Image (cartoon, rainbow over all chains, first blue to last red; front, top):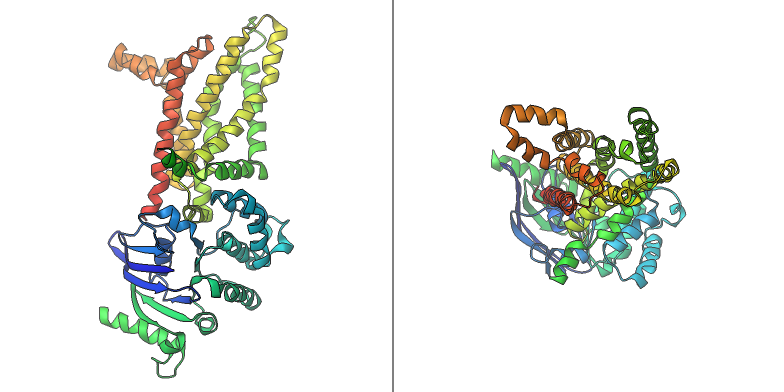
Length: 243
Length: 252
């Protein structure tokens, strides 16, 4: 479904991503973990075709994001960090814009929009402008935009960041509902939600993958068996090596 | 070739509709239209002495177009790309399977439509001049047409610079400066200085690239294809720069 092959990206002298590779199959939710500035967002932006990699490639549903960008992007739903939205639009207007921009077949547009609104549970706010919505609803509008065209691959950059526990639960439930039919990557800082939400976790630090395992498997690498201490131990280790 | 064009232009109509909606969803378009018409009216009557010329033409009206466009149209265009950068929606836009040229032209045409609405709303001026005496309506229609093309040229500067700077204020200031250069190049005050310094030949060359010079031909009522080609070519050049500057973001 999604194949990431040796992605590399530098900003000036700083190497943000140094050869990241992994594969995500349909039905898998992959947690993309790492400290701030580890290269999570940069990797996700390259997969989404927003940023051009210096080297490497990503195949989305078999289509190369480099050689066949538009076809690859058509098979991908992307929620950027912070879920940016057009504030002056209502959620249905926003979704209509996306449907038109994605050239979805005219006949199916209304159904696609209705389905996304129902799946993201935002029908109660559909008459309000996005700028007047709470953070939780805005995030769900962003998610509705990402799943509008029913893409086989979803890339969600911190979908639960900054939400209250109820809102987090709502977003997690939405992801769980979609999981069986899609390949999903989620980046997050909240390690406690990883075992509940993800089948697999990739830990990245300084642009390199340092662990790729089940959340339980990664947790076992620490003394007390928690994901959090494993996270600290593994990312500290990299720091020691580079010094 | 056809498929290539379709791919490049994908996203055009969605972007056009969204941007036009954005102008009218906020007070932006209404404020622009109100202030633009007010300023144009004031200059025409007060500074242009519309009723005192004793001639039934719109020369005191049209002569202000380049100068008002120079200030107002960068203000209209400054948000086109800078606003996306500020709110982070550019990331959303770049993740869509659309072509950058489609986005660029959709945005430009939306702003152009608002400017065209401003021109349409000056129609009472055209009507009243016909009450004053026999007016050359062909010449007036032609001048309106060239004025609209000129508006596109000013907007293309504003839109391209908006993509370059990513800040609305910077985009506005830089666009006005660029627009001023292309406007004032045909101004007698500037031309006489250039002539004194570099000679007549060079002054003529400068004048040829001025919006005012190109626009004046139209005001005499002659359809100069050169003016049409100039403004369209100018707009296309800046739209092309806009594409380059908008795709620059993909490189990081």
